Image (tube, rainbow, N blue to C red; front, top):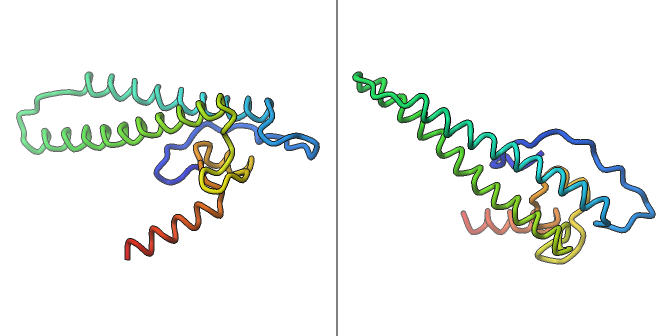
Length: 143
């Protein structure tokens, strides 16, 4: 599953890992390219539906309570779309990494992130060990 800050992406068939297969071979890259593009397409559709919703629902209510409720609803939708916009940027960066043959390797230590971790979080740039260490450091600095 993606991080709780990420929007859920479409279900997909897990990649059938073969022992004789090189990590991040063309078939694996195609698998993740498909997941990332599908996820991006879903997010873009959400953005489009929000734009239409905001345009259609924009009403100048006479009652201040109704107006405040509508503004709060719109504000929440816009915050959600902003998070999704940032996620689309991460997806684009992941797609770029695939094209540069850099996808699937940890930014911190260089080891393989792993197929199953990438399926759970396709925009991951850290292996589980480095991510865990980063979270521990973040908690220590936050205290």
